[in-house]
Amino acid sequence: MRLWSINPGYLDRQGLVALWRESLLAQKVLQEKTKGYKNHPQLIRFRRHPHPINIIGSYLYSILLEASYRGYNFDFHKIEAPTSPKYYLDPILVTEGQVAFEWDHFLSKVKVRSPDLYEKYKNLSALDIKVNESFTRILGGIEDWEKGVT
Image (tube, rainbow, N blue to C red):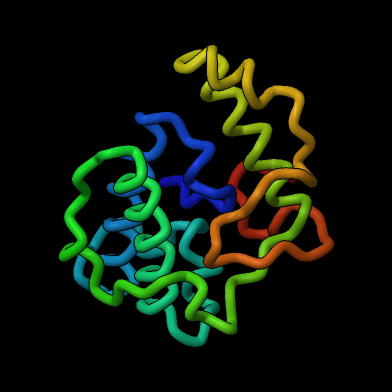
């Protein structure tokens, strides 16, 4: 499961569809409607939010907007608390180091499966990357919950 901090507008088709599915699963986990993925590290920051169901709904809504912009037909009704990300005055904080880590991870994925997209984005600095509207960027390194990073 990868719940990207970066704006969904950067994702290729495969990445956007996967993000939608994984975020719907995250919503179910946060609602305690599934047995799997309960302790997945990607969910920590959503659980820390004062309103986890609402913030995952906001996150899903931002994905839905990008999908709609591209002409995809994602089902709005699957979002339990669909709200514009701009509604929240209390976004999830994401560190610059986390954004940089995810950006590098993203580039390694699209380099293989979407080379044209890789060429388009390979010279962007992580500091220039837009984050999902459910997040606000702050100073700091890679998040402590990030799996596989020491």
